[in-house]
Each structure stands twice: as structure tokens, then as C-alpha cells.
Amino acid sequence: MFAKKSLGQNFLMHPQIAERIVHAAKLPEGAQVLEIGPGTGMLTRALLANGATVVAVEADNELAPQMEESFAADISTGSLRVIHGDIRVFDPATIDGEYHVVANIPYYITGEIIRSFLTSTHKPSSMTLLVQKEVAERIARSKKESLLSLSVKVFGTPEYCFTVPRGAFRPAPNVDSAVLAIRNIDMSAFVNKKAEEYFFSVVRTGFAHKRKRLAKNLEEIAPAAHIAAAFDAASLTKDIRPEDLSLSDWKQLTASLVQSA
Image (cartoon, rainbow, N blue to C red; front, side):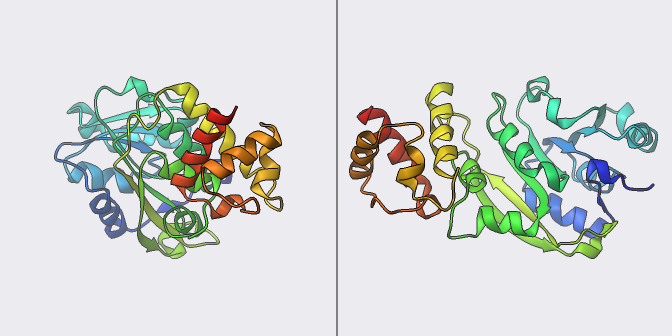
């Protein structure tokens, strides 16, 4: 099977790494797992062997029927369900009860996938993802925050699990990968949807122009006087840059902006 560049496919070729990913996921017994882009089924096999019930969403027109054929026995017992479709239009609400996301996801939609599941009304209990090493480091290890790292940390706790060399895939990507786990996902991180939308509006605006100071960026959504008052309330210096604020700083700043408005 040839990988399709248009779908960002890099097939995992080593069963031992698939087993390590499942181990890193720390799944409860009999867990319900959503797998994104199962490809040739390497990770699917490891999940099923671990006793998980798997819902696999595959966009590839050739791989989806191949999965149904290769895993016919697991499908007949109800251990596996293969859905032919794009994960970006998949509704997590169609999964009954608690579930976990475990997947080797296409690099080009990493941020989109993470954000869509963490902000959905039916969030997963955890996410264990094979992503670019640089992305995993930026989210879980960097001392500087980014829009993506904050989008993760406001909902859960990221952990850099282990590095996966580029040679573990076919075709081999140009960079190494890493397994990133997001645990302790908070099902009610915000009091309501309006509060969530306002928080991300502030953070997105804050990071909009990286060369500008945070206070200057925020003038797009609030008067300078309100921003100055919010900075004082949050004990932030006027020259601070967005990447230097912690998650708690952003939460305090957002709350202060609401109060000073």
C-alpha cells in the first residue's frame, strides 16, 4: 500500500512501537478508544490485543475497505468498528460513554485535531498521539508558551512520553516524531461556552503579532486604559510578551479584562 501525500500518511511499521504507544496511553481495562487514521492497522492490532474496543475513522478510500477485510473477525465480535470518513467532520457525540483518543495523526492537522476534541461537548478522557517531535516538545516541555500549548494546558496535562525515530515509518518523514499524552482532561474547564470563547479570543489576539508587546496586541479587542488596568490587576509588566505568560497568568488576565471592561 502506497502512502498518499495528500492525506499526510506515514505508516507506522514497528509493532513494538505500537505496543509502547498503547502502554503510554495508560488505558483502563476494557477502554473504548477512538483511533484516527488507522492506516494499515498496526496500532489497531495493539489496541485490540490490549482489550480495548476500537472505533477507527479512516479517510482513505482504499484503506477503509481493507481494514474491514483484515479485521473482519474483530468487527463481527463488536471489538472494532471502522468508519469511512474525515475525522474533521466526525462528531464525538456519536460515541456513547467515556472514550480515549489514541492515534498516529497526520502532521498537517495536528493542531486542528487536538483543539477540536478538547473543545468538543463530548471530550475524550485522554489523548495519546504520535506527532512531530518539535510539536510535542513545544506543548509539553518548552518554557515558552504558544497558542497550541495553552490550548492543551487549559483542558488537560500534557506529557512527552518518548521519541519515535523517522525510520519507524513508511515513507520516512523528514523529522522525528514523539508520543504526546494529554491526561486529566477537564470536562468543565470553563463555566460556559461564552467564557471559553472569550479566553481563546484573548489568547489568539495576544499571539497575533509575535513581534509586538502583548499589551499592544490586545488593543484590537479592548481600550488601552482597560488593558492597563487588567495588567495591574494581574501583576503583569507592560512590556511582557505573550509567550512569557503562564496559563494561570492568561486566566487571571482574561478575568481582569472582563472586570475592567
